[in-house]
Image (tube, rainbow, N blue to C red):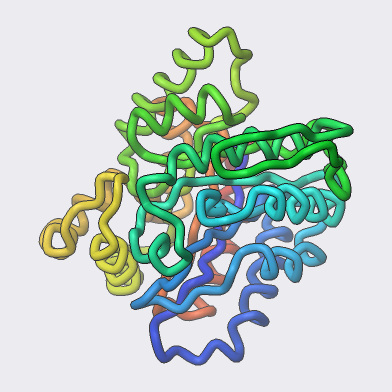
Length: 328
């Protein structure tokens, strides 16, 4: 089982962001010292009631502290972005990381983001599929020919190809069956969000495997997911965790979000099916159970949420170092 850090890059409206970059750098250094092997950050736009750093510039700054770790965006909202820019920025990032980049891609589910950027929400799936096709051509082909519904590239190469032959692995998100099947056919891994219960991670991982086999594709090299994690008690983190998930519930989407009132009324039951919270030994047991029951072998752990202080975050990261030792 590989463990990584899924970095929290969101803060409440009005929070002072002046110290936060230094805090994130400190977290990365401790994550590396604790032998976490990967680092990813997310992306949203117009993210009220949360402030949020953007993924690629932040990752470029953190890459030096994360030397030797695998890292990348988890995930970029591809339908809202130009795939030529995504391909060349990610190729650059792969060289910056010594060929250790991972690229997470997703559809997006918030209409406000699409309206603000001027992309029709109903086009998100065909834009995503075509965007992935074009990115792979730019990473692979010496001369790119592409005439699609949304993009045309004729007889030119990319400015550079990634250090990894064929490009970094593309992990695809989406917590419903159609998205998992899409990831199986055109991606390298399905990347489960923290919203997917332990039981459903297992079911959807099985669907991913079956779909790849039916398409004549080789088995995926890894089966990643994101989990919220706190080594301590639920009482220490209930308020910032519930705040975050109430914000997510207010956004809605395809991922099975429950109404905010449902989260408030049943938060502990909701968390028990999705989050890793407890003592070091309890978290070790929970991680082992995930490996056995879901087939996952790479868990990105998010250890901070809006309102949780740096001291508590660093304490969990330090304790994760001992968890890693026990997993060997």
